[in-house]
Length: 626
Image (cartoon, rainbow, N blue to C red; front, top):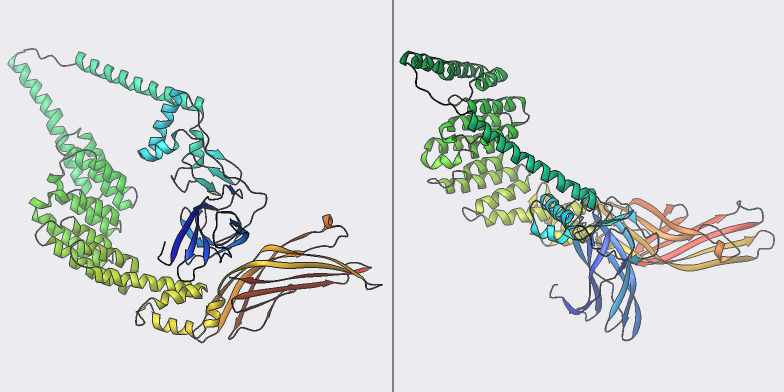
């Protein structure tokens, strides 16, 4: 918490929620603003859904020594809250000196794709973890499966082991304890719901355990049989006449040397001509003679490079043979160069990496890697170029070369507009020397780009704050921080109107007799009205104001209250202007006005031809605030 806020009291987070809501309130505190002395509620919210959250409205009541008071949050983060992340929200001012508890409910959530979530039923208790009861045999198998699922993470395995995964229509509770809404993969442990559910059936788990035991016993049996066959078939050398021995030697030499040697030679010829399949067949026919095993796998790598498919699998197969690669340095470097020529830079790095350990005793490797790095720089593959040099950074002036090359490549990346790559390269350079100047510059550029994105998206208040924190002379990609700040300051009215407005509206339906002129009506106040406003400015000062407004209106008239119907009417608007008009007709009987931090909506529709005897008037109005 910043120095501006002082914690007053930790409150109990809500124990109920609207099922399926993509936001969950995880923590609740009462806090006091050190500057104004006023009291607020601070909520920590978790996005448990599958989409970024752009805004939300939370309402409720707080209980204090002086009684209850209304609570309202208008949540509108500068950057949309990503799934799994948390955001902190501060309520509107609370008219009380002390808060002991609070009951809150999330009324509206606006997602990044502009869809809106709203509650459709009554609140229910938050789902609680349920113990999973299994036999010892099934539980042991479940543990083995979870270890595999969580890639060996003991912490995640223990958290999930003895808990059920509970699934409902619009939400599910992971066995790790995390609530998920509208998503198949848990935001906390990253496991899929379907996989977790499959690991809590006792019969299936016991069957899996039996199957694994059977396979293990079968492998042990096969190994014992293999050893027994070897023992029985071990050659017994019996003395024979010298002539017979010589004949045997000749036959053996022919079978084990001369014939395999011919296959290796034929394989070399086929490989030199790019006839990969023939070369592989010849090397395999050599039955392990000389380096035939290596060259068979090596040729498979060349074949994968030429076809631009399956290279990493082929390379892993080669490395997995356990061959002495120190005797094949040139071949492996040539393999890396071939990958570079075909644009497979990850394959190139893996090839170079396979023999980098021998660079200490081989200057040719260092020279080859530096040449490869220069080629990658020419291709614009700056990060790969630096990573190749890092493999031999321990040699002579290697660290200085990595530092200089990384900074040079970072500047090239910036010249091409690739700020993220430049940042990565400056951070690499910083491991071998001081590059904080480059890192700080890239951070400023990233802030400038984020501010420009807010500006283009119509989030002018966030953009103004971001541009104002940057040096006025900072320019990148045709955007100057000082010019943007001046443009926003000269249109402060438009900046101030942007954001989320919430409140209530008054709705009324009136029935008037065409014959007598007498009237009767129903009216009332409804919460959860809101408006979201963005504004896009052009350099000539024209503003495009856009957004949406939602309010309650009646849809029929009934002589009894039980027959009265209505709904939340959501309307979008967009108009161009050079100054904010007093009011704007956005269609469908709706006008809006925005000024002084308030958003006013008025709705009026007269139906004169719906009924032979009566006219009907539908009215709604409300003034919303930030």
